[in-house]
Image 1 (tube, rainbow, N blue to C red):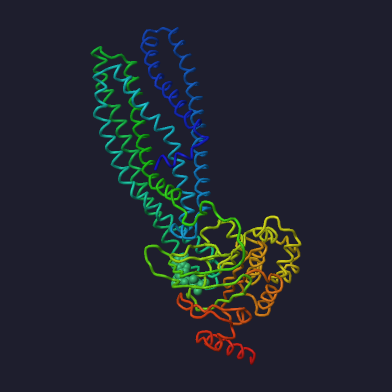
Image 2: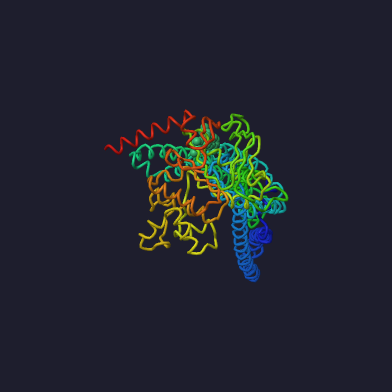
Length: 579
Ligand SMILES: Nc1ncnc2c1ncn2[C@@H]1O[C@H](COP(=O)(O)OP(=O)(O)O)[C@@H](O)[C@H]1O
Ligand SMILES: [Mg+2]
């Protein structure tokens, strides 16, 4: 796991290695300071030798400055290494996510992916910085200081044999207690992000149903949960400081007390005693830092696991080896297709589908909500793969095509469609980067967009807000159709894409389709029977099965479902006219 993550260090290896190098220099210099102080007290002050005092004082100043510089350099390189590493890691995850299929993304949920890219990577970054600095610094400091104390006075150093295990035990005990709490905080972050995303995306619905209060309550609950857990964890960790202080003070008292008897006995000088006390503080301090690193590592292990999951996820839909790079025509075949969304539960949402669609036909699809209309068409551009059986486009199995080739030839205007923030022009160019204004105008004519674009003061340069909130539902749908047409596809699929467009414009779009793009296969999913009446043939879907596939005229005579929908909608229309 760690190996996998460390792959993202790349060009920051040098900075990563320089950090411990400077840290080591810093530690060595810092350990020398109390030693020189000892010498200064014993040989200088106690002997009233000014020369020694000046000499050692001068050395001390130089050493302090050098250790400051080393500290600054190690800090600089640690920051550079860790933030560069995090940047790379985030990029690697992002590239990987671009290759995800719909089902890959569904298996994570998009808000969880966001937490992983932000909070989790931040954790790893912090841990990385800590490890490159403190994880080297603390043990080095501990060992050097212990060695110095040992060389000054062997018996006195025995005190640490008692204090270090006690303190170590307390610190590890606290860290282990706090760990599950931190872990649960990160899990709750996922839920929090989910809520925020859902709420913000659906803010209009929330407002129009006056659900702000309930939404706020729901949010407060989760927010509070995070607060409570964090508080609990922090309270535990807060014990570190008093325990630490207790140990420091008691060891200083112990050392002074026992040490002074040695001084009186003549086996220890006053200077050496001061030295030992300073080293004691350094030893205990390093222990404290070690425990912090330990906590940080423990916290970031779940984060690492979550990041590795993203990096190791196998995209379920990929381009095969030696792919076909050209789609011959817009013909479509379904051969014995069964399809289920989850591999584990073999509950088919599409059963036994067999269809033959000629290139250039205009095909309507009707069926109740949940009859799998969207699922059926999503198999054509390989947004999902059929579970059994095969789907063919232009006579070849869709699985044999280069994914880009296939998706350029099969344009889908999805049911849940989005525009991105940017001008109308920029949005249309998603369909084709090099499209000229002429070409844009032409597809906008077919999709009946020019009618409203020409009314905007800025025309094609009108800015669309994020999520397309400043255009109406019907306008958005028409822009999405235009964007799809700009790809010059061989097959265009409209998944309920004119539901917010009035009937007259709806009919005009279909007429333009027949007139301007006769060679393109057109598939139109609709709720309104009027939207499929002028299609060449219509598929009637019922509970994931093809109930009938025929011309609208024949269906009206022979198919019960079609007749029922027809009757109910015609009646509705008449009533509207009477009003
Ligand atoms: N992403 C998905 N994951 C799991 N089940 C899904 C998914 N999308 C749709 N379904 C299920 O598949 C069935 C058909 O849905 P869908 O194709 O969207 O129907 P329609 O477009 O006709 O309303 C429904 O039972 C629905 O719950
Ligand atoms: Mg649908």
